[in-house]
Image 1 (cartoon, rainbow, N blue to C red):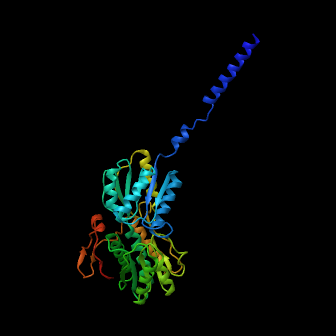
Image 2 (cartoon, rainbow, N blue to C red):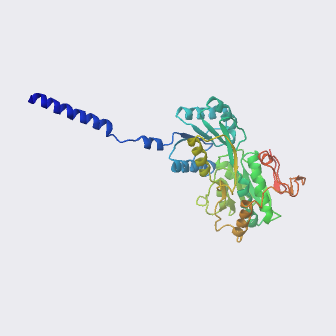
Image 3 (cartoon, one colour):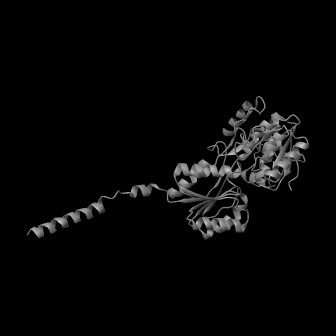
Length: 367
């Protein structure tokens, strides 16, 4: 009888332990549900340490991680070729990426082709125009910040010649040069913008040499559409001043940097990935400006900026934000003095995205 009692007690204890093991484990279902089920990939044209274009995108990636807690992956220095882009995309899909941002113009066609092969992936391409069932495009109205930086340059120059180190003769770069020139001319009608092409996005030595050549030709302010601080360093060495690009590089070129048109990609990345998480994402063609969460902005003016420039810039910025000032409102003339935008007319987005002509006062050819 005692033996049976002991067996019964043991069975009861074992049952209790089993029940405790099954029912007492912490319920992590809510925790799992709180973790976003996406992995986001970023394809970069340059290194994340360039302090330029790629750096600005990577700051947006880090902002995305911080805000949404999603996992991200990235690949640097991806060439603008079919093979390079295809390899990068396939690698990211193999790693589980469900969202892929391609951040350079030359990635557009390969990404569009690959989007049909991976319909479960949400593709977003920066600076292009193509769309598919699962690929959108996005960019910002950088011409607004370019215009403001042109005001600073136009007020600063004493020779009335501003040098501009430019990457490639594509509409994005041409549009920025024109906006910059119009901004400079708004405060200094005698100012001209001398353009030289490097046909590079990231080549510090070549871009520095291009700036030095412009300075030797008489420019006393250097601007750029490049991803390095090479032009700014060249200006510092010659005792000139500079307008940067992509990010605030005042600490890298303290002896020349006045300001820079800069990118703020983070809020857009958060918005798009949140829509993917919510199941509401659809491909779109996005083109945001200063009035739209400041995806584009102007870096703070340094002490090297001309006296009174801050007030003029602030006034123009307010007009841009409230819609009273559109950078490309006519009359606007081209290099040959021919009217390109009639008085009171405004260029359409399609016309901006296909721009292949220089405004009056820009020196140089579109090669």
